[in-house]
Image 1 (spheres, rainbow, N blue to C red):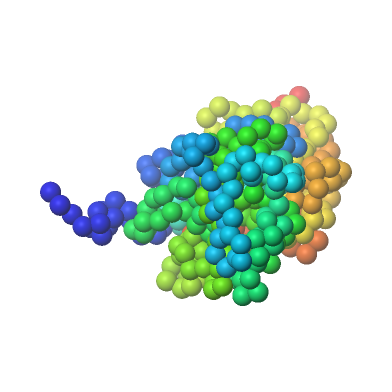
Image 2 (cartoon, rainbow, N blue to C red; image 1 turned 120 degrees about the horizontal axis):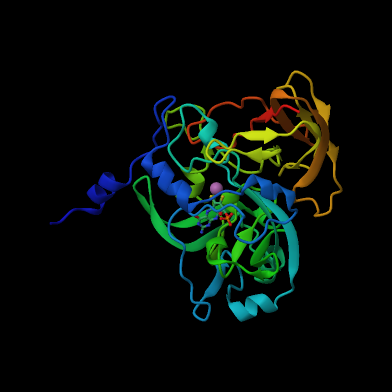
Length: 374
Ligand SMILES: Nc1nc2c(c(=O)[nH]1)N[C@H]1C(S)=C(S)[C@@H](COP(=O)(O)O)O[C@H]1N2
Ligand SMILES: [Mo]
């Protein structure tokens, strides 16, 4: 039996697809969801997400990297390309940054029709302290060319996506790559990166959606033309129709606030129950565009809004911020809504415009709660 590469991919790697309106989760979506878990929302209580509870998004397989054989090549439009092994990388000046990471597909499963992909509801987020070395001094020391436009980051992972065989790669505009907090990170919360988070080294681009933070780095190339690889030109584009339009690239994280789910859950439905009396609602809010300037909470399904109290900015500019709001919970059915806004004036919408890949759905969170009888 012989088959060409093209027919093999045509049989097993289908083009972008929408589910029928109202359709249940497919077996393929379930398979992705079981690999790529989200943050259990009760862990929004922790400023730094404990190991193993940070969300995961892995397009292909987790590479099994031998640290002794690993190296990072930094080349392209550079006067003095360099290759670093792990010992050399970790001897460079250290820098730590606390960063809230969110997948651009967070909220996808709330769209209807639902684009077939990783079916996130709202849980594709986490905050870690990333330690590594700053990228900009490395690029400058390697003799950055005046013609440089973008920097292309290559991971060790390989797969097929919509019929296109590829190694995971992303291009980043040079001005973004030179940001002082952009890191080649080799530690997460003070420990070497776990295999699923990019061991031994990954890129961290504070403020950008997850796809920019390339894991399992093997190469960094400075290029003099805009990068046209799959993940920049085909994937990670906001297309407002089902047509093959070029779309708009996904970049920075839109504002979002999420509540620690109040009270206690039903096992299967996850519906929340609360005993009556005073309740402190709490949650975390973030934005990659500018600092969070306020969070609103409604305990009556958006009829009235109140300003939540923002906690101190303890983890710097790129990490989420805690908020709290007092609630006198009275018996009955309630819906708690919450929304964040940032210094650029962005405010979470009730229903953002639909797009064909299900990116950037930062709609207002609505949490139904039953307050039990006294
Ligand atoms: N090499 C590589 N890097 C990658 C990915 C990937 O599949 N391969 N997934 C990206 C996406 S889409 C996201 S949201 C983040 C997730 O990072 P995490 O799994 O550490 O939370 O990694 C990004 N970096
Ligand atoms: Mo992602």
